[in-house]
Length: 401
Length: 156
Image (cartoon, rainbow over all chains, first blue to last red; front, side, top):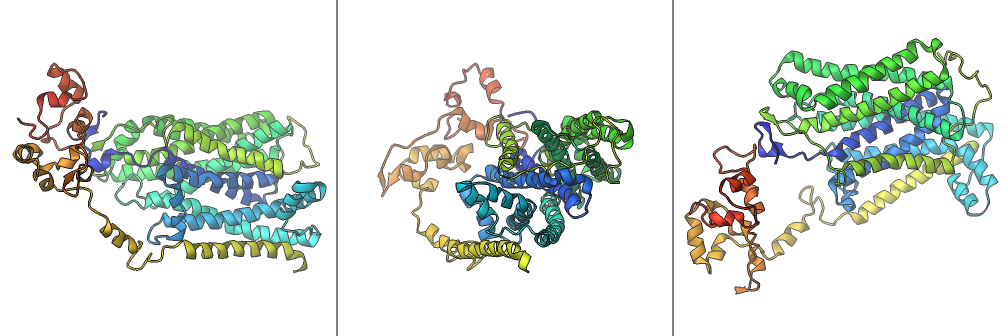
């Protein structure tokens, strides 16, 4: 037993929501963020984002496939997992997860299928034997790639992507809602929670796509599209500013009101969570990337492609860390103080090989990446290269602005 | 519609999956689920039909009257026999001894209640186990608590 500051009631002593519950909003956030980025191209026709139009959808699917694993590992009893859909308790926010998840999965798979339909048909016609049958089944037996069919695809795609935006927002907004609706926990209970979660989800999604895109281009020996990178940096900068502002506004409101909960939330932030909150969530994970992305956005004309890519890559890595720290501070931070505002338990550190340990969290994070690589072997994740190639190392074009 | 054949097939596939879910749900749902609330009503009858496995302290006192007397006069009188011993059903079947009663003599069991913890009321007897053992010149062995305390009446 460790040392504890202040006083705790027995029901405050244990941390029941551990690393897997930190991973859950983190992974679903990557799903929502990557999808919203893809819809900027598919719905809002930001054509400079064409190179990541497919990648962001496939990344979204990859993380979506593994999001429920975090809950399964946390809860145990995997055979019971379908009960949330077979016998849903409609008074429970968690019961909605199964339905929102399934509907979003159907929509996403449908959209990815439409985006890749032409490739599926082309691969079906080029391959032989079992592979040919595989692609034929994927094409649902229809090989119509006429201009009229493509127009139908495009129209349906816009509708699906349009529906997907509220879908992705609901999927992640409800994760924030689950925390925000816990009335007894003053660190969670705020109507801002779904919005904060959603903004940081978009940040993590864009950051993840930037990293995957750069690595993908590096390995396939192709060049990173400067207008695309510039545009992603701009969107990322916007959302990280929005996200950090909302996170700070919530805390500033609490600090300014000085209501009774501030007696524990104040020390929680500057003492118990000093490293993960001040060190990572605010300074290393937010201030540094805001400056790096600010350089990319405001000083674009002075940057070479290599410097822009490096700045974006480093900022994205730090932002992935920031969003993880934010999830950690919410989930774990909300469980290390007395709900009667009397004191703290020692801060929590997960083991390496436990059921909710670090090793398993890393494995869960790597699985979606493996999925993307495998998907790329079946269908291309990256758009075919454009004909127009800007001069390497030169200043960035306007980037569709 | 001529060029939307693939869309129609995809939508039909989705409808098929939704119908499959409804069919699977129909067969997977327990018959009495939801009859009187959000649970399987038949489970109530199933639980009632199970033979009791635990016994009240009075059941132990029928044979172990000496221990029961010591226990009833001490601070542990609110702690049921089966907290430290195994369940009654592992020891007695049909009023006959079925197997020797197991006992957990380890300091780990004592520590569950008496290890110092911020979440325990201050007046509750609690010690930092290793310090307490060292202060009394004992070695940290499994039965170390029983060297000085009688578990049936720890104040003796």
